[in-house]
Amino acid sequence: MLEEKSVKHWLKRKVKVTEALLVAFLITGGIASAEETVSKAEFDALSKKVEALEKNGTNYVTILSTSEENKVAPSEGSDVVNIGTNQIGEKNKKKYDVTVVGTKNKIKKFRIIPDDVKPDSIEEFYACGETVIGNGNIVANGVSIGRDNIAIGSRGVVLGEDSKNYGDRSINIGYLTETYGTDSIAMGFSSKALDTSTLALGGYTQAKTVGAIAIGDRAIAEKGVALGYESLADRSGGEVGYYPEFGTTEREAIAKKLGKEAEYKETMKVFETSKELIEKEREYYSVIAKREEYQKQLNEQTVDLIKYNKDAQEYKDAFAKILEIKTQYKENEKKELELGKIVSTANPEYKKLEDARSTYGNIFGAYSSTMSAVSVGNEKKGIYRQITGVAAGSKDTDAVNVAQLKSLNTKVDKGASHYYSANDMNHHVDNFNNDGAKGLFSTVAGPGSTIKQTNNQMFQGATSSILGSFNTIDAGDKEFDGVANSIVGVANTTKDANGSLIFGAGNKITNSYRGVDFTKLNGNGLNLSNSQSVAEALG
Image (cartoon, rainbow, N blue to C red; front, side, top):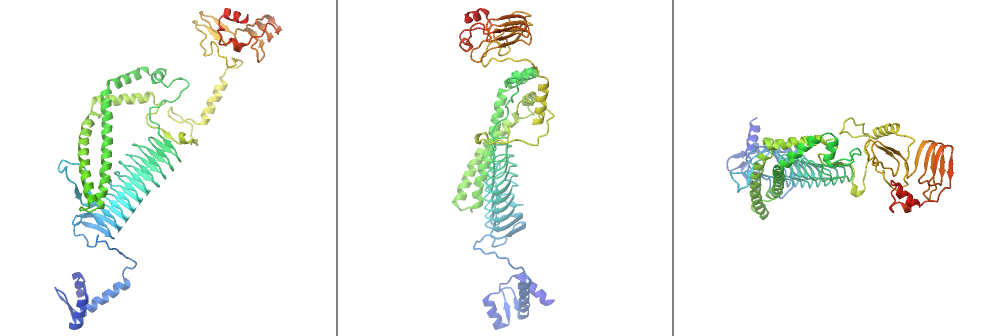
């Protein structure tokens, strides 16, 4: 028991057994240090302990390096695990709850965001809560697992290689990924989530603006959502859809046909009187964009502060650049605070503007987009996709499937008119746009027909009229015969005849009057609605 205590005491003292001490032991039979003397018995006991450790201790653990990093355990902080040649902050800086395993990893945290206390300084902050596993990672905050990753944003997570995490609470998974802004996610080879709340999922994907989502290899979302291989989403919100019943994409006309003209005009009045406020809003969002750009620049420069020691030129250059950016950041921050008081629902005028926008959106909700589009293809590359498995829509803003279109077509067919036909053989004349009835309560049917008188009805063709049943006016294909014929009765027929008149039943006129080349007459001053003009044309 005494021997074991002596060995423990010896081990605690960490007396270095040198060659000189061994020689002294051979001469004197004991070992002496500056503080105490060890007897042969104690030395023998220590030897046995060493042999036991060699036999039963940990094997296959090797750390081979010429680096001086982490050679001496830190004396400040607590709950720090550092295995390998890693640097956690500058020497003598406190560290808490940090785990680092690997080689050449560097962890430093700085207080960089501009403040009024020390606006012209950059202070290293104590490392706390970082977890790094791998080699060559540069970390200011968060978790990094892999090789040569950069994690600068707050509470970010990086899993991969050569990836850059400059966003707060952002996630990188893969090789050569990039994240910026806040809550952005990039997963897949060379995927890039370049702004706040963006998602890039798949190889070479890019989500470029706030809220953009790109899913699928090489999908790019300039804005909105891009789904599928090489899909491109680049259409902004505010596009009016096509509706045959409206015949226009002009908003006021649509609002009128929807019976919401008064609401529309009221919202437009609010927009008109809020022009200055809307301009302030644009300025506010521009200032926010600048702030995010400054933050990006600060994060990029921080990399060199972590990478190099204070005496390196790269460190000094980055330090100077950060101070410059901090000044710009601070000025921009003041503008953001000022404009933020105006562009706020706490401001009654801005609340009124936001309410008007909500009303405007509800007027056109089923007819116009309010946000950027969802794309499943790429018009520029000729990529188009069907969307399958779509259930029948039930609300105005739901998608419609083909089954619903077929059902609508069946309903239209059942309600269609029959036994009525008009053919101008592509020679358009009066009443082509169904505007021949110009008199009050008048009715017009047929090419070239026009009535200006009140309560009159006209049923005719190109200067021909038929009243009755089973009557036919026939003409050849080349010469437009069958002109100026009139039939009253039943089962009467004219063929290749012009200027004929039939009353009765079962009559037939053929090859009467000369042929008329209607193509020459049409467009040469012939007015089929004017009997005098027709008579002159027929000679």
